[in-house]
Amino acid sequence: RTVDRPATRSANHPVARTRRRAVRGRRVGWRTGGPTRRRLYEASRDAYQAALKENGKGRGSEVTTEIRAAAEFADGQVFYYAEDYHQQYLAKPGARPYCSAQPQKVSLPPFESWAPKELLDSYAPKLPEAFWKAHGPKPHCVIRSPNEPIKWP
Image (cartoon, rainbow, N blue to C red; front, side):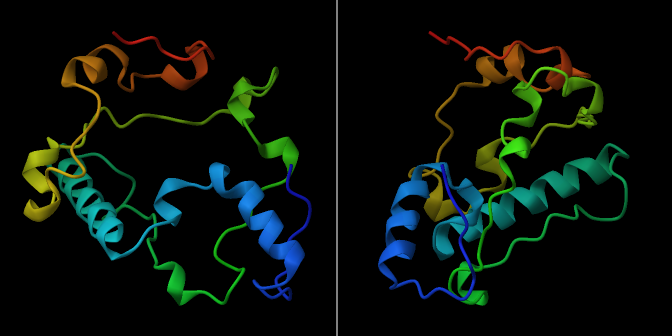
C-alpha cells in the first residue's frame, strides 16, 4: 500500500526511493518507458483515432487522452495514485451501477498496419486475433463481465 508521496520530497530522499520501488509493479504502462514506447503509444492513438472517424464514432474530432513524456514533469509529479476507494473500482460490490464504460465498437486496426516498422518484431501483440474475437470489448462488457482472469490456451 502506498502512503502519501508529497511533491516536495526529493527523489533521492530514502523514503521516496523506498516508496518508488514498492509501487513499481503497480504503475500504468503508458506512463513509463522511453521514446520508443512513446512512439508506439502515439502511433496506436493515431490509428485508433482514424478508425473512429472512419466509423463515425467518437465524441469529438479527436481522442482526448494526452500523452506526455515523463521528462516534461518535475521529479515526483509524473503520476499519482487515486485514493484506495477508487482502486479496482469495477471489481468492488455495488460499484457497477456507476460504470459508464461504453465501447465504441471500433477496433484498433491490425498492429502491422500502424506500428513503426522498426518496432514490429519487438512489440508485436502477444495474444492472437482469436483471443480478441472471443474476449474483445462488447456493449456493457465491463458491467456484465466476470472478475476472474481469462484462461486462454
